[in-house]
Every structure is written in structure tokens, then in C-alpha cells.
Image 1 (cartoon, rainbow, N blue to C red):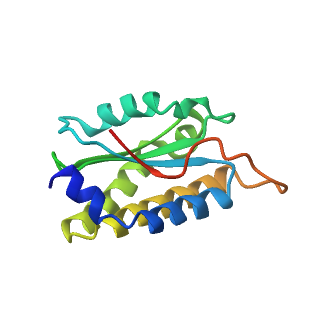
Image 2: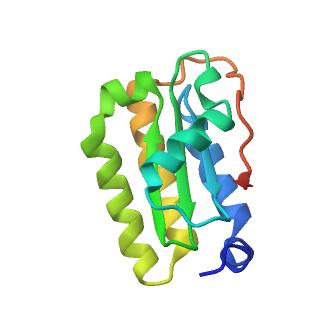
Image 3: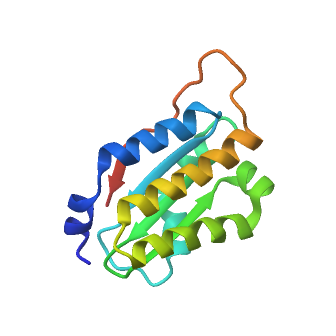
Length: 145
């Protein structure tokens, strides 16, 4: 699928709402990124984008990136050091597997929203909101490059 069409078909408001809900219950940060270029290895490309988005600059190293490359039909979910230590590779693969099922059915927004929801649950479990206000360290919108 062409990235422009993919992005146009996404319900950005629902995705941003899912990100905000995930972050409201935790001290973590979630971002969704759509790549315009084809990628061979989504995990490697996601790690590079993670760095470009300065996601490791969060105070607790608990940022998570949901990365989608529609041209090559690849995607990955990766977390920064602190959340990865607690969840592990199997969790990220499980979240991605859930996205894959929805994507195969053409339900792209639903797949991303569900992935963000699962990530939010993990962040809330491992980095619960401690009361008071939490600083939103990263933008909530869907980014593209």
C-alpha cells in the first residue's frame, strides 16, 4: 500500500486518543510512526527512527514506538531500555502479532489502536502514574518520514 494512502486512511484522532489514554495511566510515552520508504528489516528501521525521534530522551527511558512501513508491509514495536527490561522481546512480538491480524483484514487503525492499548497496559503496570501531573515528554501525533 502506498504510504500516503495508508496515512490518509488512518483515523488519526482515534490513534491520538489511544496514545493519550495509554499515557494517562502511566509515566510512559508512546509514539506511532509511519515510514514513507520501503524497509527490509522493520526492527532495524524502527530502532533508527526511535533515535531520530529522540525517544530515548525520556526521563525514565520508558518510551515505546509503534513503527509501520506500509510500502513494504512491515512493522515493529520497540521499547526503550527500562520498559524493554520489564517486558522483553516476547511482549513486543506479541503486540506486533496482534497488529498483523488486524492489518491482514485491512483494519489498520484498529490494529494500531489495539497495539497502543496493549503497550499502555504494560506501561501502567510497570510505570504507574504516581499522582499529580505528568509531563508529556513526546508529541502524541502520528509522525511520518
